[in-house]
Amino acid sequence: MTVAILIPWRASDDSWRTESFTWCVARWRAMVSGASVVHGSCPDGPFNRSLAINNARRQVTSSPSVLVIADADTHGDITTIMRAINRCYEDKSSPWILPYTRYYNLTDSSTEAILAMEPDSHISEGSLVFEHRITSPPMPPYGDPVSGILVMPVAAYDFVGGFDEDFAGWGYEDKDMARRLDRAWGARERLDGFVFHLWHPVAVDPFSLPESKQNEELYRKKMSEDVRRVS
Image: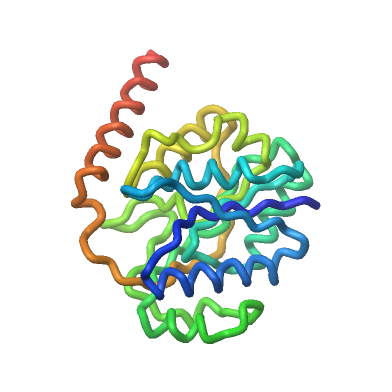
């Protein structure tokens, strides 16, 4: 099996983010034997997650059969993640997969405890102390989570052309990718399990930033165009 794990990452002075990235990379290497772990970045300015992921994909010179797209501060239930990887490996036309139904935003103390663990340690869901839990099916005020960790046959990613790099700054690139994959490749599959997001400081509400509002407008425009195209 050939698996490439793509991580969007740009070097930061934030020690929390840096330590989380280092730990997550080590955990991927420990938990998914033989996987190629590649991180991609983007130029200065608002972080372009789409461009960073696509740049990571461009760095993969081998011919992987499965891609895992994972944020630099997110990990999860490795049993469920491996079920998703195996499914996509066994069936090259498999649906793209979200390997979780519960997404935990951890507290700083819970994050500290996890970062103190060896990367290959067992982490139980019951041990997680969290600020927010986002579920699928969603419970208000949250929508259906479609980010954090995605697993898919490499053909699915390449078929839709990767992430849309017009989404620069915070938000909506994940919703757009999910929408395009559902439409062009086939409806997503979601496995019962959990992922967790490691805490780090946030200076401002990212959804209040101008680029986030621009991304929302772009996302809504693309949805409207899809509706007109169908009708």
